[in-house]
Image 1: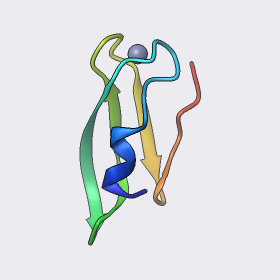
Image 2 (image 1 turned 90 degrees about the horizontal axis):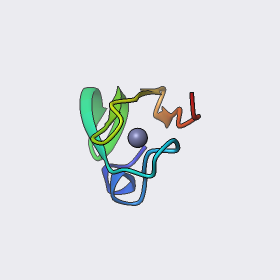
Image 3 (image 1 turned 90 degrees about the vertical axis):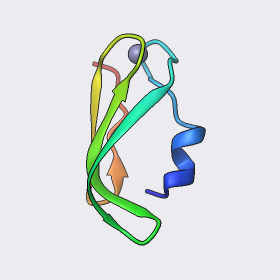
Length: 56
Ligand SMILES: [Zn+2]
């Protein structure tokens, strides 16, 4: 996913804003990492460039 996408993504559970921890990136693309909600502390993984934003 593009880094810019982070600005429009929000937590699917509480609509809070997300922090990102990048573990692998190429150019402006995030390949692997973790999105973490600042409000409810849910974690969502990014794998193969695709954020898995399913509510738990
Ligand atoms: Zn949340």
